[in-house]
Image (tube, rainbow, N blue to C red; front, top):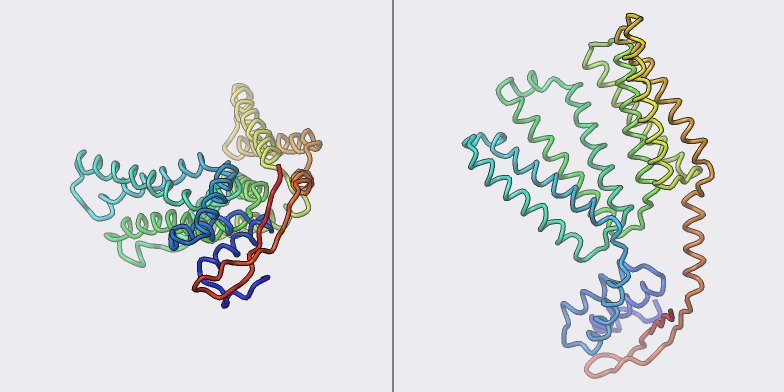
Length: 346
């Protein structure tokens, strides 16, 4: 800090915080400081300047993830509201479901608008929220396979407890990831790589269960929880050396899906002449999926990693001239101080 915060009035302190964040290219904290200044101290001589900075920041805010963010919130809120009549044993009529559904849609849209009003919704944040929700839900389902809810809470309450936990998991992971990550620069490449890795770990694991024809739910759920969470943790550490972009990750997923479909339809053709069992079918599908992903990894090897793309963006940003100036703060009734002015030329 260039000026001791305790020597300044709150409006001046917020203004300088915003300018310092802007100089460090931290747009979210800068926007938050300027917005607090305008809202709390509209008569401050710095309010018009803060408003000007806010207008400039809003014109170049990264809201690349706003569409999936709205869709995810809308789906979560609508599903939650639609399940409430079952959870609370309300009248199971069309009107009841209609009213709860209307409330869910309204809450999903209004909640999305409120959360996106003060913070940019980047593609990385949107990917991270989706990853958090699906991983949390997956872990919840695995835990329900491990724990016998019927024996724990009784058969009558089993469905309500399961459904209530599911709704809490979906909404808690959404809100928790949003509030913990909205001030951070989340890599969309890392978040999407983690999500796809977790999804494919589940797909391969359950194909392996089908091949082994295991019917022990508690055992398969315990192993599945360890395998899929292990794959997630591994992908997060592995990404630092790979740094795949979301496009490359998506293309590798397309390769895996294409291979799996080829294997599935191929077994239909072969099944006309050979008697294939469940194990043989899923072995073929799993092998084809692995081959498809391996081919996609090779074919997309020329796509530059996210690190190089970020470096190119940083170099472009470095070419933007930044001017700094220290100016005296009008004293008035406040203690005198200095103002840091940041100028950007485009």
